[in-house]
Image 1 (cartoon, rainbow, N blue to C red):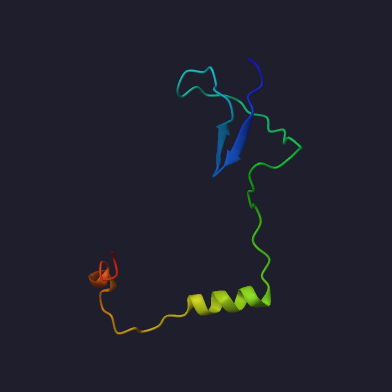
Image 2: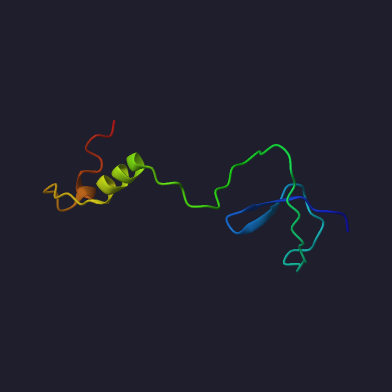
Length: 80
C-alpha cells in the first residue's frame, strides 16, 4: 500500500486524501512529521500566561450575583 498523508487533530489521524481500505480496518502508523508550510495551527502546549491574561482570567473566574434566578427565562427578550 502507498503512503497515506494525514493530519493529527483532536486525538485522531484524519487522512488528507481518500483511503482505499475497508471500514474499521486496523492499520499500523509510524509518524513522520512533514516539514513545510503550516496549513493549520495546533497548540500542544499551554499558553504563556502574561500579567494581562492573568487579570482577564481572574475577572472571568469570579461570580457575580445579578439577581436573575433563571437567565434562560429572558432568552428571547432581545431577539428580532
